[in-house]
Each structure stands twice: as structure tokens, then as C-alpha cells.
Image (cartoon, rainbow, N blue to C red; front, side):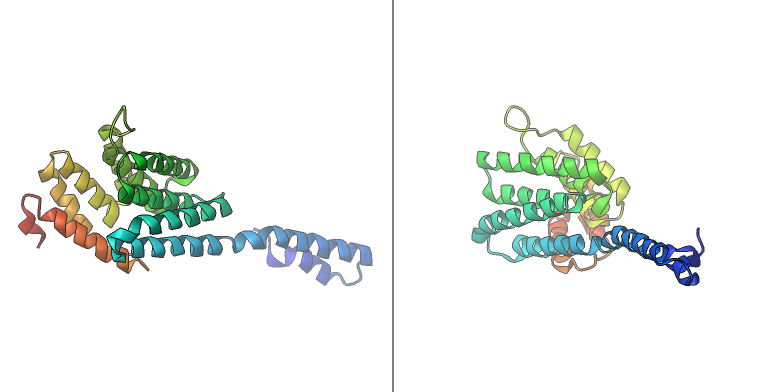
Amino acid sequence: MNHPMDHPMSRAMKNPSAPPGSLHRHWLGALLALSAVLPMAGYAAPVDDAVQALQRDWEVIRYQTPPAEKARRFEILSAKAHEVALSFPQHSEPLVWEGIVLSSWAGERGGLGALSLVKEAKAAYEKAIDMNGQALEGSAYASLGVLYYKVPGWPLGFGDKAKAEALLKQALQINPDGIDPNFFYAEFLFENGRASEAVPYAQRALQAAPRPNRQIADAGRREEIKALLQKLPQQQAAR
């Protein structure tokens, strides 16, 4: 690594007798270098803020909004999520949340009309995985896995239980103690006649550490986990 005083600005400062043109070139080069670095240094903050705003809006709609209003609210939020994804094309996190919002809207809308929405969500998750599947602790894998086991199979949809399980396991490899991947895999196992296998994953989901700034989502998810545990064998062990 270069010594700090080897920076072009420092070299110019150490040589005050340098010709004016040379000094100007040193400063110009240094400023150009800074102009390339400084935007990148501050680039993460706006996308993080935008993603956190989507998270907050989603969890309020998902867990605190009257059922009759959810579909419309998710529709509005999906437009916002799409704009965020377009605004930060080099980041996969907005794409993950665009997919989550579209999936949630589809769940509220229901019926055949929801199929076009889940196809859009699938495309968003796949693009996010291609860019950076590790982002948001592998959430794109988990969410795409949920789509594959919730959506009907051919000829109506793209549902595929084997693909769902592979994606959910991949999410667990990335985030083995996370509340969402453990819950989703437990739910998948239960819904596919493997209730006894689901127990440890549901228990692990219930014991997951709280996520920063996700109090509403964590509280709502824990209620869903408790409801699932009541349907599973050995549910008393979770208490």
C-alpha cells in the first residue's frame, strides 16, 4: 500500500516550487481520483434507506393492515418497489423486495389473476440471484423457493416441489439460523406430508434472534410459527 504522503495531492504540497502547470495537474488528477471514489463510498446509504422503507411498508401492510385493504396497498407498494429497483440497477436487494411485494400482492389477489404477478416476482428473484444471491442473507433463494411450492404446477403455473426444496435448502445454507428460511422450510415440509421433519426447523425459527429494525415482521412471523407448531407432532417440545 502506498504511504499516505504518496498521494498526488501530498506530492504537490511537498514541492511548492513546482511549476504552476505541474501543480495544477497534480490537483486536477487528485480531484478526478476523488470524484471516482467518493460517490461509491456514499452509494450504499441511499439504497439501504430505500430498501428499509420498503421493508417497513411491507410489514405494516402484511401484519397491521385490515384484510380488505391489503391488496390495494400491496399494489401501490409494488410500483414503489419497481421504481427503487430501477433507481439502483447494480443492487440486488431492491429486486428481492420487489419480488416479495409482488408475491404478497398475488397472495392477497388470489385466483388465476395472481399468476401474472407471481411470474413477475419469479423473474425479480432470479435476476437478484444472478446479481448476488447472498444479498439479504439469501432471501431471494428462500422467497423463490416459497413460490415454487405455493404456485400450481404445469399447465397452470411453474410450481415444482423439488426445485422448491433445493432453493429452500440453499437459503438455509446461507442463513442457517434465520427466522424466515427455517419457517419456510418447516411450512414446506408440513404441507408436503413430512410433519415430523418440520418440527426442528419450526423450533429453530421460533428461537431465532431478533432482526434489527424488523420488530413488526418478527412479531408477526413468530405468531405464524406458533400456529404451525400447533399442527406439528411433538409441539409441546417447543414450549
